[in-house]
Amino acid sequence: MDQPAPAPRPRVLHLAQPVDGGVARVVLDLARAQLASGARVTACCPGGALGSELRGSRAEFRPWRAARSPGPGLAGEVRRLARLIEEVRPELVHAHSAKAGLAARLAVRGRIPTVFQPHAWSFEAVGGVAAGLALCWERRGARWADRVVCVSEAERATGVRAGVHASYAVIPNGIDTSRFSPAPAAAAAAGVRAELLPDLDPSAPLVVCVGRLCRQKGQDVLLRAWEQVRHAAPDARLVLVGDGPDRDALRARAHPSVRFTGAVADTVPWYRAADLVVLPSRWEGMALAPLEALACARPVVLTDVGGARESLPPALAPRCLVPTADPGALAATVTSLLADAPLRAALADRGRRHVLSTHDVRTTAERVADLYRELLGPRPPVSSERRESIRS
Image 1 (cartoon, one colour):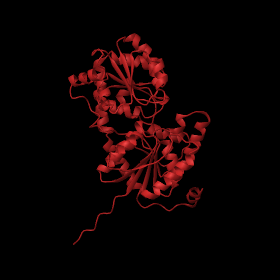
Image 2 (cartoon, rainbow, N blue to C red):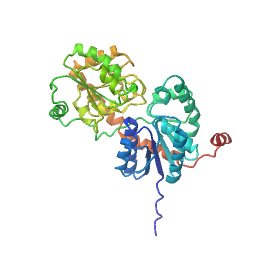
Image 3 (cartoon, one colour):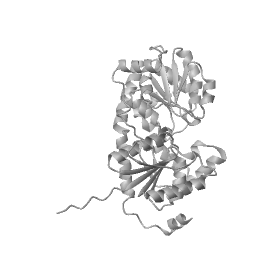
């Protein structure tokens, strides 16, 4: 007897803006994991680094012309996106970050199952009138998201406290633990450092910060703290890996012991070369850089912002977390850890085991797939209240 052909897998549309940093990494890793599982994946973004990576993958890529932030061109961006969605005809839309989430929800308005993933709330990133407008939109736009996916319980709690009434799911960030891994041996790690920084004394303590050079990531706080670190450890060197809008301002205030790499194609060598990885963010959902560093068996120091505690095993929090925007506390913790190699090794080992068990991207992708299956099941009837909100 002939077996019936298997039902086609539903098509998922990932929509992203911005196209760099952690958002791009999450989208790319999810798309790759979903493709590997046999899913049909289309990705839509304005191009950039993410667009280049997606073009090289097996995902169907559609360019979407859109600015990074909301502005006068928003109406045109929404119309272009609506046309793309009509062409792709996805069964589910997964929008990443505030701008894509804004455009996607306006374009779809509940007609297709929609997942919105803020990757840190937009109203935390701005102040004044802009923060109020962002918060008003997130409260209103929540009705057009079947799920709001937060990468940490802290991020979900921030949304709830702010009055964003939504159907939430918490799915922690994951990373590719086969790519982010320790150097094969201590000699190999030393070789990496010598290749990256040939003029650096091999015995000099090396601190690395990986992230976009912007206010959110707090490199300005780290530079203030670095003055105190230098007095305690004059041979120490700091490397800021990444690029961004604050590059020139940070360079202007940096001591000669601070190096700037600009954007790099591969951060793994920098993690492996570091004695300590620091991320002094002002806000996060759950940052990828600490997870990547721990997967490479490097100890971390983080500010105690959203998702930071949840990215660490509980025993590491007292040693690795410092208050936000506190250069003195940051300097004291960095100085203490640079002076204690055995403690750094113990923290790194415990952190790597935690990431392997909790933050592997395959686990994240499986949880996202479970969420998709739930949303793609029979949909409940649309209530008159929701039908009216869709019309408006």
